[in-house]
Image (cartoon, rainbow, N blue to C red):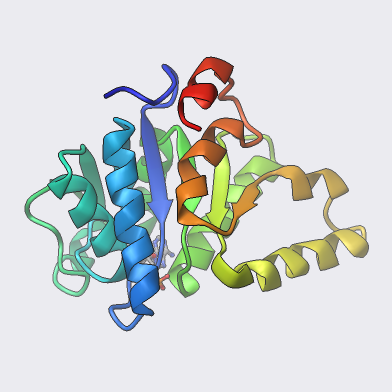
Length: 199
Ligand code: AMP
């Protein structure tokens, strides 16, 4: 079933690696994985089997979706590399992020910790520098990411970041809104016909 627009084939998901995450968050990550598979979208992710990243990837794989993991050699044990999905083993975090960026048409940010923050701040800073126009959608249940958005606004209020930066992403509170939002997010994917099919 090909629900995805022609120019949206792969979606990178940044998310937490903690197995101690709230069970509803792990369930939401799995739901997104199934949704990506159903929409015929390839999941690009960090390659591990832990936390939200593992939940999302395992669910996508079990639902018949395509999954590509990108994991640094030194994290293969710690993040329990998933052997059942295609995985690229790289030598550094920088290489991991570069490949994830290049292979993805759009990005989804689920709740996560410092690693997720690092990944999304770099992605948005590249957007700020006009290095890309790929859609970015935050899943922010119960306002999870609001403190980050407030920090961004704080830098805008001090004339350190242009106000237009605040239009660089879309934030949704329900996991079922993530994939439809990818189509409508600010960026270079414009396929109204597909957006209609996904509602
Ligand atoms: P966390 O949100 O801290 O659970 O981390 C989520 C993912 O981000 C994990 O797969 C980490 O390995 C990854 N990560 C942490 N720091 C970095 C970094 N500097 N570059 C790339 N990935 C990172």
